[in-house]
Length: 445
Image (cartoon, rainbow, N blue to C red; front, side):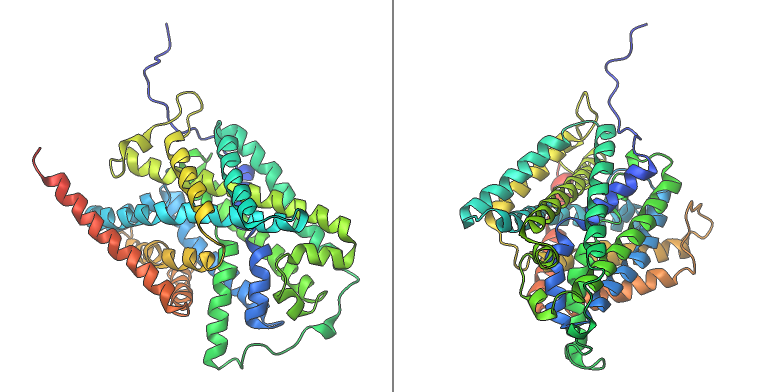
């Protein structure tokens, strides 16, 4: 008998726990901590900068419980697109899911563009570049990643483990290199105002935005839910293993750098990792470290694009987005139209925008629709459907979800008004587009 060649291809569950965890971890690191560390130190002015990383880790853990429940229950491609519909029902769930997709079409390419721009800025330490040349590098990187991701998921899983080893090894090298060079006298005990002052909390909120940006990605495994082996167990495990490992590395990195270089020198540096290794070793070693940072940036963007390319695919497959995005590659079984569209927008954004303010915009625009809505939805799900099967259930429910909501609101409200306005504008525009779409659908042909 001849095989049925007309059967539609499906996503393949080809990612093991190790591979899923590696994808999460390389997504979380990227260029983020190497760019945001000086910004956090500048805001907190010394040892109190550790608080931002601790708050970021606490938020990742609390929010991770929310994602773990949803990912274990609904292991499908699309992540939040699927979760919001399940949590809020047909009417409101469709609206929330549409808002998420609308937000993702802007936010995801911006995330990729920010990483590519950060890559070009760090490359400037090795090779002096003009502004035009930096744009060429960032755009070229997006094109390179498109080629790397145009393949079967099993090959991607193996490549992710290699990237994960490079990521963890580089940060460990940074931490271990500091031993014997600690100088506690250079770390000021004070910081931005006193602990009860408004300036302190504003500084903590804004520096926590930068730390949270570096932790984002602990949920990437949920976007790939349809490609994870034994997802009810491996999705929660991948989330918490990756958060724990990255939190240890980030706190160790911040503590070490802060005790080797003066805080004001850290705050003023555009290439803090390069400066750190040059201080301890020499310029040649600093160049090697910079190359590794660039490799980590590539690995993270690789993971980010991989996860986000599944979101429009899932929406289109269910009839909630353009049908072309539902197509899978006939041979390698991955959403190639979604991948190409996302990378195309990221390429354009990498040529148009600067790094300044992009990080804050990315965080603030996602808080209300994605993170807070999901936490509220999970609490409501528990209340409405107590008897539902939950492959993973958060301990001490609903405390982790409530803590997550409080921290997200703190970060949102401590942001500058222009970013809050930008986030609310994205939501308002999305609501208008949703109802326009609904009216067009109802019209007779």
